[in-house]
Image 1 (cartoon, rainbow, N blue to C red):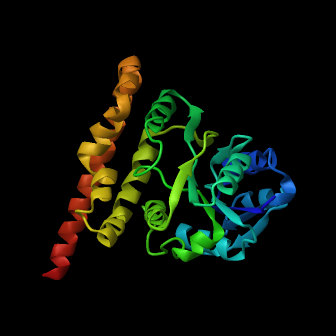
Image 2 (cartoon, rainbow, N blue to C red; image 1 turned 135 degrees about the vertical axis):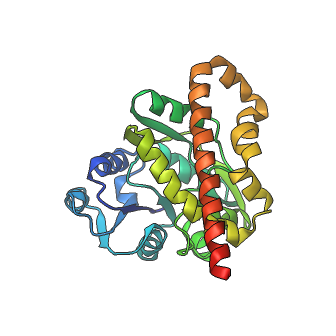
Length: 282
């Protein structure tokens, strides 16, 4: 069975990392064929101790998230690589299904893994409802890759701290076919805070400007990923998905509230950055 390297960037991740690593230990795929690499940004909590307790490889670095993933990839020994965040939990058959699918079809270069949102409160249910509409490109990004493919496309762009997964996904899809598995992973959002959620979205909205500049504002994929028409309407209506909205009106209302709020923040951040750029040019 091929070796699978799982690469996890972390920073003060003690709240969620234990569950993440535990889910890897509980995979149906043989433990001896899984390598876990945690690339940590000198956490001040119990993150390093948790990594050592699970017997995972710990790399300490000041590098940002994209660079941290590349650092982990460079020391990875596996035939395949899976990139996780420290607040993700794998269902038991994820790795087994990924390997079987890739080994069964050598033309595949990467795989999407369905994501579910877990935590407490109404807004977590809303977030999970929203995620159920996303099943691949252009909103999702490949997470499970052949190692040689990852290096062939140049790995993660270390100049990006937002949209870096979309950027990698685009370059991977340019060289081969991608697929999707049925086993999900779970994104642990804990006790959901709208204030904290919007703060993070505001931070990443600033970073998306670099991603847009790289591919061009009029790029058709970017028009879908960040365009109002697709992100607020089409993605929820295509392939008869609108039926879920009719069946779940309260969740749909909450979803649109979050989408409109995030979209407004994104537009305001872009305008602010454009204004600053114009002043600097003058």
